[in-house]
Amino acid sequence: MATTELHGPRLGLAWYGKFVRGRASFLSPSLLADLYPRAGRPDDFTDAPLSADATRIARILLRSGPQSTAALREATGVEGKRGSERFAAAVTELGRALVVTHLGIEDEGAGWPSAVLELTARAFPIPKRRNRDAARLRATGTFLGTMISARPHELGNAFGWGAAAARSALEELVSRSVAGRDGSAYYAVGSVAS
Image 1 (cartoon, helix red, strand yellow):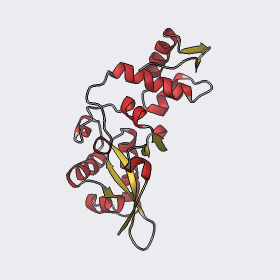
Image 2 (cartoon, rainbow, N blue to C red):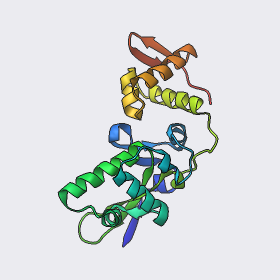
Image 3 (cartoon, rainbow, N blue to C red):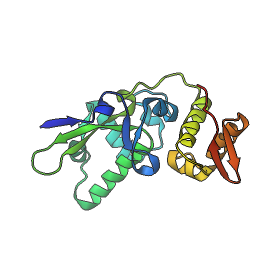
Image 4 (cartoon, rainbow, N blue to C red):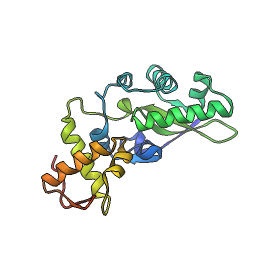
């Protein structure tokens, strides 16, 4: 089996997985550290509200290290169209929770190559001591800095926070004069200090 690496994730240059609205996404290490919701230990996924399928995949990765999706499908016993749908849903769930990242692909011979997954907390250094409020504001500022303007539900949907938490973070940026508001839309006017 030949393995092809995604150089960004393998070298720690970018996290890759299904995060923003469950779609393929790259996150810089600093944004990943700001968004990562748990302690930063490889086994911290046990603190996340995951489905049984997602937990099973994460436990296999914890025990065995990086694995191809083909090996994970076999280990979890998901087969056929229905199993494939369950597996894809579990991998998306793990991405949305930032539990796993893609490290590259593995050539399985005939057919398409398989993605190689690894636990995010093992693939990237997640600071153990973080000010979660400051991290949320930096992540909000990063998001807002990529938009002409954004509404709370857009930020909430992108990062999985919900509109109320997003609105609170946006209002905090307005109070610090690094964001402005025009009706229900917010826009960046400065940068959020570390």
